[in-house]
Image (spheres, rainbow, N blue to C red):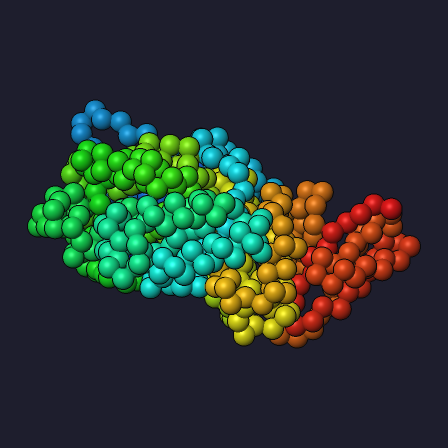
Length: 496
């Protein structure tokens, strides 16, 4: 989820984390490696897309050198018996002068092969993570639910994020100072007219958890047969680490996962789950209960169990290996966590735009929270709000709404509900984003003002969503717009 590629065939680039650095996944020393797919701009006109249409058997890697590309699978030292036949995941190579057309064709074939859940409902809500962090309290969550019920009525869900649990892995034991039980909090949210949503990291546990102490045989093993400490082969986790990954090839683990989500649905009344830290269910460098299963197969077996327990509940994923997740998730985060700063707004906004082609094809986009307060300028907030709006994905807000200024709450009312439009990024600089018959977004990511040339039908009227200012087009349909540094326009069209 955190690794987003861009650049050219000769000089590929990453918007954020590289898997070889952050997750310590081995790659050739002199190459850069992408997983799932990569879109590059060759020296000649057009675009080159290389992608795996599924990840049902082995993890596929695309190794990129300045002068060549290699596509291959990590077979994880699993032996192929005499006469045995392996069916590998298909690979596609597309060249096109049209960036979006190449991505759309690839996404549609991938969606068909994986039975993607691309038509899920676009939800709205408030999330506790940015506002309250890991030390959230029962009363603070409920206080925000009351503000939502009174002042932000378009938000349907109250998402209780990481921090309510006593330990990673012990999801039904509340933190001692949380202030109540999750069953009681979910019921209280329902009483104020909102729906509870819950964060869960179902494929990990910490060493001090009851789950780990009682079932050490349920975890991915190192080659000495002990539970694999994720610090030894990868990133150990962001808190309460090192984490241990549940072994999805184990039948008891599959039964456990199914029962966790069935219980949350029946006892807590939850029909919206945010699944996080899913990568640790596909840890490299370990061994599985079923030695014939690859880590992609074990991971998918775990997600299949989660889906059986969750039923028709809405599932959004974060920190997930994207390709083996297609078909199980209704939505996927497309970026890092957002913070109220220009550096974060720029990084997260660009990551979301680079992955906007997935929206309504592989799943619906989860662009992370809409931030309302902080030290960013109004221009910078407009970039952030515009990037979320034009993504067409779900809307969550992340501030402590008990402290939000009334005019900021009005922003939520103005944004309304998600549009559902499929965005189309028109250029590699990510300056122009259109939608099919809907709004147009124009971005200036630079620190200097910029003149933007627009062209439209003379019989069209365009108005900026934020300022309510009409754009003046001449008789030829041309318009020059002065856009300030770190600013954006969100334009809506009305025929005249």
